[in-house]
Amino acid sequence: MSHAHHHHAHAQHAPAAAPRGAIALRNLTLTYHRHPVVHHVSGQFAPGELTAIVGPNGAGKSTLLKAIVGLMQANHGSVETGGLKPHEIAYLPQQAAIARDFPLAVQDVVLLGDWHSSGWFGRVSRSARQRADEALARVGLAGFGKRPVDELSAGQFQRVLFARLLLQDARVILLDEPFTALDARTTAELLELVASWRREGRTVIAVLHDYEQVRSHFPHTLLLAKECIAWGDTATVLTQANLNRANGMPQSWDEQAPVCHRDETPLPTPPHDHAHSH
Ligand SMILES: Nc1ncnc2c1ncn2[C@@H]1O[C@H](COP(=O)(O)OP(=O)(O)OP(=O)(O)O)[C@@H](O)[C@H]1O
Image (cartoon, rainbow, N blue to C red):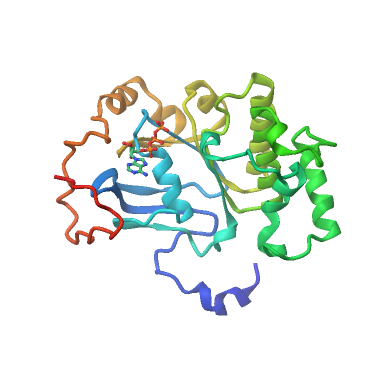
């Protein structure tokens, strides 16, 4: 890496900044309507590694990904992204959260991964189109470029979204339940793609529910149940004792869940939030 980077205006960060490609959580608390769903979590996602986030339904896993990608503000503590630019963090939401009843061709959806270089209204270069075709071939959809996305199966559409991730070429890739509702073959092929991202030195963080899949493909695991139950080598995290502890945590959607009093600086209630917490 060039020394010129050290003189760049954006290169100034806190002394304890995470290394490039590393995402660090510092005493992170995330709340909805002042009820914490992620509570005082600290740690660092290993750079250039595959980390699974596991935990029961409602544990705050999706919320944590949203905070890392900047879709949600920390109420307390922070997410340190080590000087990465926003487009260097790719995010694949849960498929249920993605509308695909829009009249776009497969190739155009893949090209959305390249918007930071082409601009939303910029002309799509020939080379970008070529890279989109190559990405489609890598996910097993060669020749699908002109098909409308609303005619694809769920598995085919997830392949398209992985092709879009390939085009985005991000340093950090966040995946929210990427293999849910996919058949064994599609899952295996997309897992192979994830393994290739690891070989390329990318940081991958994936929310998953299949412990066997995590054990065989993800060396690191964060076990989350609102609080961090365990975070480290998958084998040491996914013990029965830890899983029992995680499953015994009260559901964070509990309306009676206490507002956090450890946070000294309560944020004002946002104007659009008309919910009465208590
Ligand atoms: N937009 C929202 N407004 C209010 N509460 C929310 C919102 N989104 C999520 N929550 C609540 O925050 C908690 C954490 O939700 P989150 O989706 O992060 O959990 P998760 O671990 O990803 O769960 P799952 O495994 O079921 O996908 C839940 O109790 C949920 O009800």
